[in-house]
Amino acid sequence: MTDFIAPAESAPHTRTWMAWPTYADDYRLGTRPESYPDDLRATVGRLAAAIAENEPVALCAAPAQLEEARRYCGDKVDLLPLPADDLWARDTGPVFVRTAAGQKAAVNFNFNAWGGKEDIQDDATFARRVIDHLGVQEIKTQLVGEGGGLEYDGEGTLLLTESCWVNDNRNPGM
Image (cartoon, rainbow, N blue to C red; front, side, top):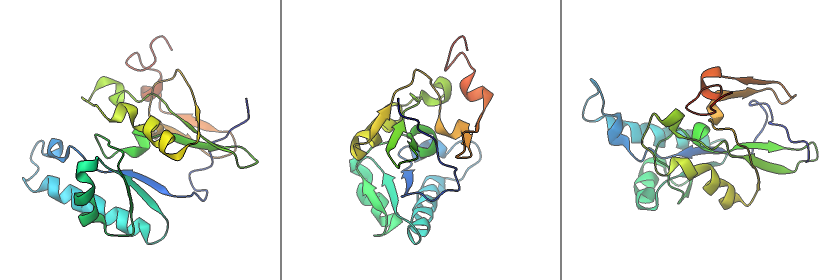
């Protein structure tokens, strides 16, 4: 197998990946005001538009929500009809890696809704859909987790969040 490494998070990258908050009504929990779902969408849209001023942004949304996302994000954000349940693309999407020669691939960590804590449909297959859309090599793993539970420096150092990886609701027996 070719030696792939996750670049440092501060390293230049091709684009920022984001996901549209499909189930924004779920964020209306607790003492949040009724306007919270719309405020959340507006905030995600402003964030995507601000990032797009400096680098490409790919924002994934269910096909039925692309028009809504466009209203909030503007014309500089690339909208892709790749549905996700939640906005946490760093957790649900693939982790992009490359070789020293520049060959790119993506690791799919078999996201399972933070150990089965959420009822998901699209997030479980979101990484696979992004990989297929890009046509990059998929690095298969038996591990279950999320990209947000990893930190890497681009030189081979990897820090893991124990609760994300060494947990029976993700990787029994580890």
